[in-house]
Image (cartoon, rainbow, N blue to C red; front, side):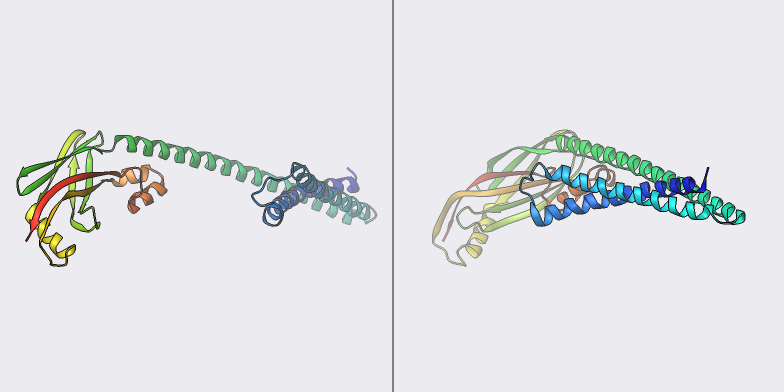
Length: 278
């Protein structure tokens, strides 16, 4: 093959590679600039897409043609050189073609690895979403709450739980009076629940509630009869094992730590109370 054709091939090959990169960069820049400075989140004109991709294609074709032209000119000059120089030029051209082929092969390999990694990560993410959905359906929930009087001085809240997930849970509860929303009692109960239905009792001593009501609501005053429904707020949170935390999306682990996850069950129940503060 004559040197001018060989170098034109070399120039076209590298022009094709560089032109593809330049075309992609041009399209990306044009789309970004259009979003930032022209259209934003508003509907884009239908002609924008073809124009942007057309400009990118023209840039790529220009660099391809420029590479072929520059290679042809360089090869033409080398053809007039002495034989030893022509042989050296031919070796350099072949080296450039080999380098081009290696670069293309490396890019294809990297693209394939990236695509396989993306597919693997996407499948892993989908599996974690499925595991989270399964965990939400399996964890214990607060099915119902029953308020009753164990004795005239003791109020009982019986919390009925149900779920198939066996494991540790944290039950947070807070009792406040309904008028001023003042907390009169609160606490945390650690539970180890089997699969199936389970019940938990919370007991409230009216004498203790009366004294706290006097201190926190009446500021030490007296002479009132309190007869109202206090609000019992319940939050049941599963305490996941390390294996469970790894099996669900990281954002859901973060949401659970913040107490805002779908895994958290909540309920509010009225607790009727009556006492006199003299």
